[in-house]
Length: 183
Image (cartoon, rainbow, N blue to C red; front, side):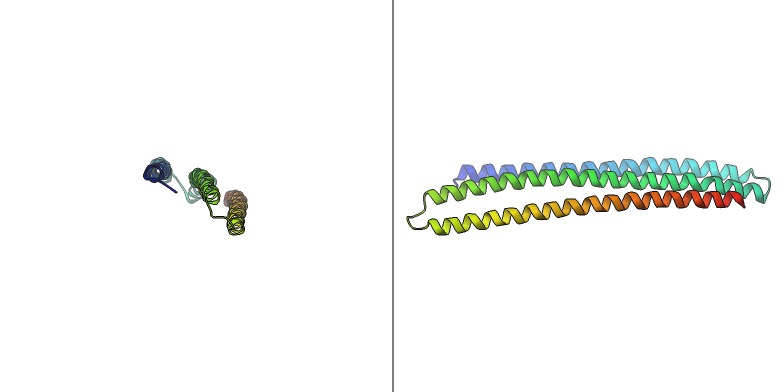
C-alpha cells in the first residue's frame, strides 16, 4: 500500500512534470512569436523596397517585369516560413511526446511494482486473479505501444506530405515567374 510520503512524492513529481511540459510548450510559443516578429520586420522592409521600386518604374513593361521578379522570392519566402512553423510545431510536439512517453513508462513501472507487491501479499488461492490482472496490464501496454507506433507513422506521412506540398508550391511559383517573365 502507498503511504503518505509516497503519495506526496508522487504529487511533487506530477507537479514537476506539469511545469516541465508547460515550459516546453511556452518555449515553442516563444519560437513562433520570434519567427513572426522577424518575418513581419522583413515583410515591412521588403514592402518599402518594392514600393520604392514600383514608384520609380517608367512604363508598363518595366512594372510587369518588376512584378514578375517578386513572385519567385515571395513563393520561396512563404515556403521557408511555412517550413519554420512546421519545424517549431514538430519539435515542440516531439519534445512533449518524449516527455509524456517517459512519464508513462515510469508510471507503468511503478504501477507494476504496486501490482507485484499486492500479489505477494494476496491471500492464498488468488494467483489466477493476479495472473489475469497482470495479463490485462500487459495487453494495455501492448495497445498503448501500438497506438504510439501508429501516431509516429501518421506523423511521418504528414511530414512527407508537407514536404511534397512545399516542393510543389515552389515549383508552381517558379513556373508562374517564368510565365510572367515571358510576357
